[in-house]
Length: 336
Image 1 (cartoon, rainbow, N blue to C red):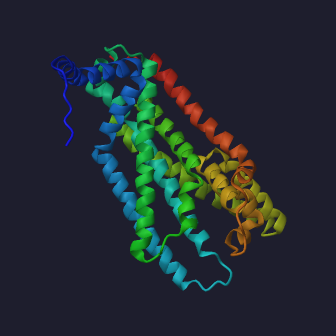
Image 2 (image 1 turned 60 degrees about the horizontal axis):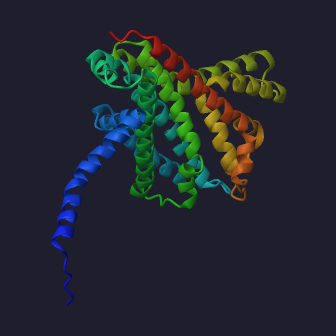
């Protein structure tokens, strides 16, 4: 056995250093907080946001809805007897639709009370009384809510894959790629609605009112508006020109034009380009068989993105516009 002898002076120095470790940690923490007020606000917001009942209830509702959709999809696939149809693409379509509605509603809900609740409770005055500027506060809030939204999406993705196992659909690598390949664009899409939600939180003083609007608005934008537009345009085309090929193509072009203001339309274009090598408008005009074909292989990732670069740019602009309005409005708002 080896015995190490340490002189009393060295032992005292070591003990003194160990005793100073908590103090050093506190000093470093204080320096980080002082140097990064944006990250400090973001971390606090994530911690508080994940604990809210609204977050938990919304996540639980969509997880249950995802399980119901998985069960329904399984029953449909069992009853379908279509030769050459790729069932993975059918499952992928249902999962992407679930993700789109989930991120739109949750993004709006998470952002809808980001500012007005703190204003109503008076905590924003306390926060801004510290050495932190308004722009740092609003950026920290946005980053914190974005992180919360990312956590929610990852939990939803895991729960959706798990729900397939529950109903007897074994997930494979292709289904896993449904969430992995478009992940940056799912997040970009969710940030669009987060920015819209935070804009509501600046414009509407009452958090309860803002939350009600945050539930109705994404449902209208992503579901009601596209449905009504499609029905109206098709009915108009039938009355004017019948069901000729030219009239149908013209109606499709009009629908795509009206849907260009919908964030989900551009997300759908991006995902279709990634998995099928065609945008939504091209698929509507003649690519459905391609999307369902067993023999069809997806193009390389970056080649697919080049097909939908306009949609990516438009989604980015849709994020920047409400964020800019929210930023300017908050900087000029009287918080008293």
